[in-house]
Image (cartoon, rainbow, N blue to C red; front, top):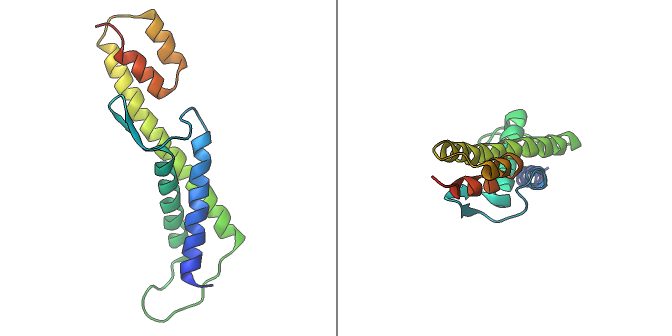
Length: 140
């Protein structure tokens, strides 16, 4: 198999694994944007992270010669499955890191303001972005 096609298949499988994470949780399918002064990478960010992580994992596992004598490579269903799983896992990690940053900002804002029972309920039961919005609208 030509290395180009193998790399393309790994990137596509990793991107597919990353895309699946878009539908897990409450973030939904959205483009990259800045919301409540926080960057949200959207589905494009998770797809990119999934594809690159899958390529890195596959490259480490297949370790082939880039320059010099060309050796044939094999490409199996296991390579596709690995790319899907690594893409999913990496994108899930990336999404969790993004949400963690939003929740840290939410906690910092809410801690510096007066107690607000309505905001407390909203923060406890909402998505990270909705929680940040509630903290931003709390009275000082």
